[in-house]
Image (tube, rainbow, N blue to C red; front, top):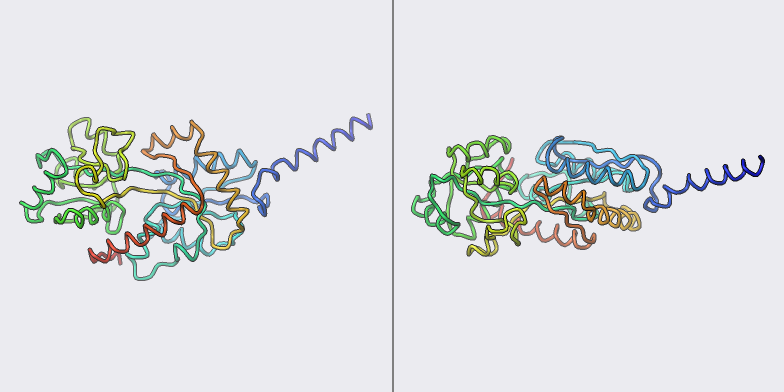
Length: 323
């Protein structure tokens, strides 16, 4: 009986250390908080919860999703920038993260100095759509119609400074054409008015656009990203349509406060990359119009730096301000 008791205690002690072996170096058993700077139920929130649930299961450690919406993501980003650099507070954000510093006079974070990139998690394709009443067969026809209308064709966006707004401004610059911006307070009203024909053009997420396109309520003209979308393989990219340099998509990534230990970042990167290869997660993301990406922290840092410069130039040329 004494031997059995010793074996039982030894086994319990070994089990107690199993989660620690899986955790990143320096992490305690305290909860990991993933801050989402947008409201619950959005695509980025679903993404954070899907990754968080799997990280919780892998490490036997609580993972909390903390929604801190407001100011186009600035409030949530600020909270993480000011958090302890111990790996317990992370930010899941979208590429508005690198657009906002150019749009607001005062932004409460520096996307490079205040953060350590962990991994690009996913991308979501934006598509250029037009209402059938415009009677345009492709992107070039849309450009010709816009030139003939002398800039009087309206386009919708979910608001000033949103990725959809800047996508159209970039397209306008590359196509040397003008459209009239009609900003909305959120995506729902913008999409509804484009489908109804009150506003004629918009960049919208591919999974939002396709059901309306199947019902001939809108026409999908081009994919915004550098590659064709697996959800719409017959639709050309903007570059294929004759407008290289106008590429745009939505990217989502995971970051930690600046100064987070290298070993912690490396472990988080490894774990999330493995999660992103799980077939069930790939299908979950696909249902939301997202494509799992992955990669190294250096890959993600390079993307952040490139897009910070890219959107700064677009905002300056279009003289856009969100203040």
